Image (tube, rainbow, N blue to C red; front, side, top):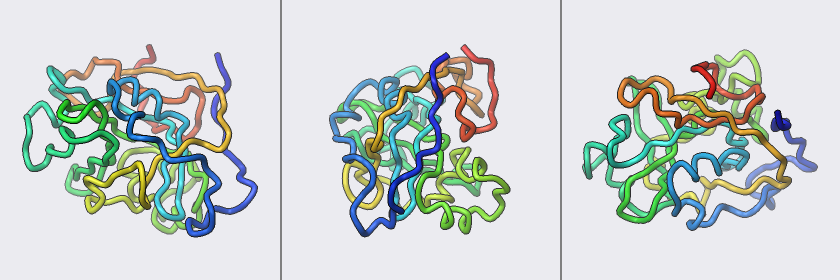
Length: 216
């Protein structure tokens, strides 16, 4: 078993307006690849929105074609248009009448595919996250689920279509790259194509969501 990702201790606090303790934002070419490659590649990267940031520790891939669990399986609609557009944009949708979920568009322009961001390990703006997620009892509960992390990071449907290669909402390289081991399971909370092994997370990371399907 390889080493797990541990909580980073940045040398200076990140306040969003003064410099940036993380690496560069991921280029569009990063997302212009097969969705599964993007889902795996996002693990260990840093999602940044204003003063808050977290290491991506869990993702799920949603494919085009026969993936009936993907919103794109319904074709191009007003809701799914962004998934069929250029890669490197946010697709944010509302679920269960109370949660917003962040996805990142993958694949070349015109081909559907997106990656659901399922959990983060908070590394900056943690006090602000605690204010936004007052129900969280432990640090690992702040963003260990897709609906929790959007609340903690103040990401809403207003960010649907946002270009995550630039601007206030970005995904960046970590300042230090560390070896990780990727675990794979079926996706969580779906009924269609429920056995497809498209959930990826950093094995041993305590900030992963509490969902526990069988490991593969």
